[in-house]
Image 1 (spheres, rainbow, N blue to C red):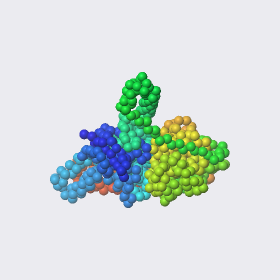
Image 2 (image 1 turned 120 degrees about the vertical axis):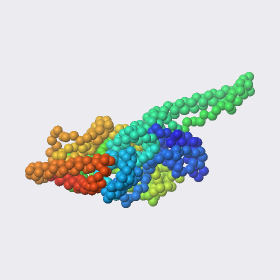
Image 3 (image 1 turned 90 degrees about the vertical axis):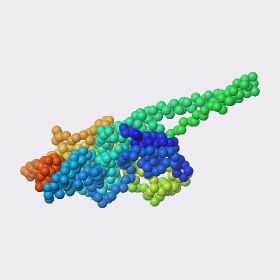
Length: 636
């Protein structure tokens, strides 16, 4: 039986049908990409599938035992619990079994009881069956793959950013038990490395899913069929996004040719009727009149909405836009993000800034904007720069204003018609212009923000994730406009198609190895985008050449560095012994034979808690020593 089946469903709001005549199914092996312009009804269709909305007509049949895990775009989490508490709640069955095992172990430690022993054996057997003893490793694997370290596990949910909380929700769902996974824009807050990991994760698990995404590379890599929503109708195409796109282009051309042939035939027939009615061929003319009356109407193919943004700069900048010389960037002396930076930007460069989340991309952008200084080195800014900055969080928008007021406030001298015409280029028409910014969707805010920036006529665009929340149509329109822009562009994006289509140069955050401590540098890279991406996310290698010379500030006695390095190695050896002993305890606790000795169980559990605390303390000691070593080594 299908997991979910939609039969002729439709839904209307205020007398207008949003969706109508929708027929589709989700099977046990489905891997579906749901696409369509913003506002086409994708979220509405999902909510009907989930039972949150009742269709006006038709019916949704859901398998009784189907458990659906759903990642919404704006999930709300309890801010007062820790990351680990929330993640562990994804598998309440495992949590309950662990709790019961501890209860029975305590009872068995107080008195030996055959009944308690038998129940404990049964609980342990269930834990083996559901993978409870491997669950902690699975949690670590998923969280680390999504950018969370062991230090994050005890942090409050409320202390994480909105994007991080979305990734936490994704981790929770991937670790939960489900029969169907539905993900709404899962890649919006993932860097390229995380997105590639998610692609591999979804492909390696034989569980069905439906993903809503505008990332065509992601759709190509994870989907076997495409559901396309447009003007309230749903079409289904087997294959990935590229297959769908090719099929759609063929279909559009075929419909256009069919319409043109029909129009030509009708025109020729009507001309024959006009010329021959009332003549010797009147009978033939009347026959053709009847034929036209019976002819099936072929509608003109609906043209896809085409947006033309057309960016223009007011005046060109100088040839040299930015230059970094042996620079170091960071938040403060305790948090250095990148060293040995020697990069530059020139007029009309299209530079993609590529790196993992948290590597320092936003800090570098703030330096370019004059809002943050260097820790060391030199930074030069060119002449005649007129900068427009696209902030992915749209902080510059006043949420109390309407769409109309937002643009009109920067061109108060222009007539209303001019403002309406400009907004229409960004798909704001009719009642849309009177909406408050605060009620706009993410995609609508992105479009409005772009309309404001483009109107400033800059000669340098600095863009932070400009394609987030944009549908494919607006994505392509933006790409077309940026390609024709006659100024300089520096941008951050995790959209691989956008990067490869626009960038001709890359500033790459690359991991390096120096004196036992990994940190990053930023370097120029030219060539295919794939090469820059691989360079960024490749495993660090030992450098075979000496680092570029740096300004010496003070001389450190090498003996002190050697002693500090030895202390780090000793601490790491101690940590390894602690971790090996804890793994041995876990193996013993997973063995049902261990529970024959109640005192041993109690001792092992107490030792495990002591080891866990000691490991955390040891990690902290090592981290502090490594930071001290790096500071001394780099100052030398």
